[in-house]
Length: 366
Image 1 (cartoon, rainbow, N blue to C red):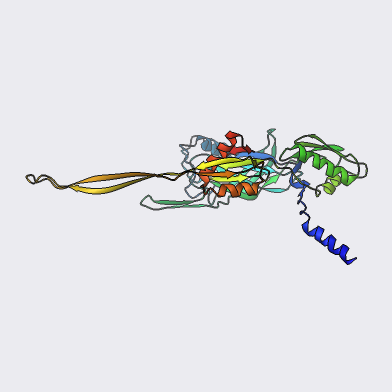
Image 2 (image 1 turned 180 degrees about the vertical axis):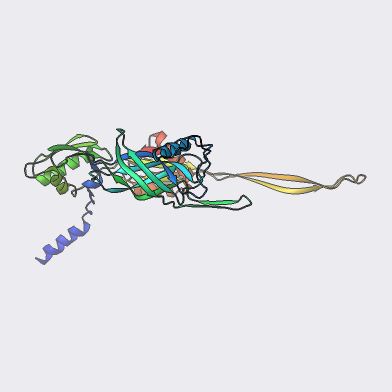
């Protein structure tokens, strides 16, 4: 008996670790459960001389005149001259299943030549959806996480962006988007990273959990879901399956950001056996000032003449063997690091490997 226990412990110690899965709610989106963008045009008042100039912002003048007329004040022929107001665009996201009276945050951005929105107050602004209907109304004090300061000499200091701010809980939802999720008998799950293998694994995990064929992969980005009779509504069904863990499939891809020199490689990146030679060319330019003395019979001053010394050094190219019959990522990184190349040179090497057909992965340049 003791020998059997020792044998089982040995098998467990050498067994490969199980792959950690990802929850279903983290890799798919449910049809109908989404945010909607809202947009509106408004006016921010109360600025301390940092608003728009009415001469350069005709829309602000027209907006102030129209607003004053609605309030019973006629300003059509008046000489308006204020820097305490600014025309702004107001944006927000309407959450799914948001009820009337729910408060949401809004973002306010200057339209014309305002210098800062600090200390301003957004007046009542209707927020419209893509269908042109008003779904919310925004109003409140603008919070700007920036500042600007200037002196009499013209020097100025600006931190962050003072022409953009937020109104926390500044909008109230006035119209709901109706979608009866509970009454649905069938809907679709959309994969955030479409893949045939991942879609099949999701359908298989759901069917294994409920015991019936309730899910099927329609294409790489969609899984059709049918509510089994054992669940009273679709909301309860989704609540039960969204915690299921599925191992998503990763495509072999190399992401390159040439601006910052950042390189990200996926786990499935493979490389065939290749030999890479890499050498560096360094050019030195040194300027040494020299003095040229004039003729002794003249009174001309000495002349400074630059003397240039140019030399070039080229490191001998080192031929290194990298890869071999589809080596994994760890060995690939070790082989490339053995060359001692910089990130810029590594980008060129990866692009050359892709052109030669030795790199089994997609290269995406950001």
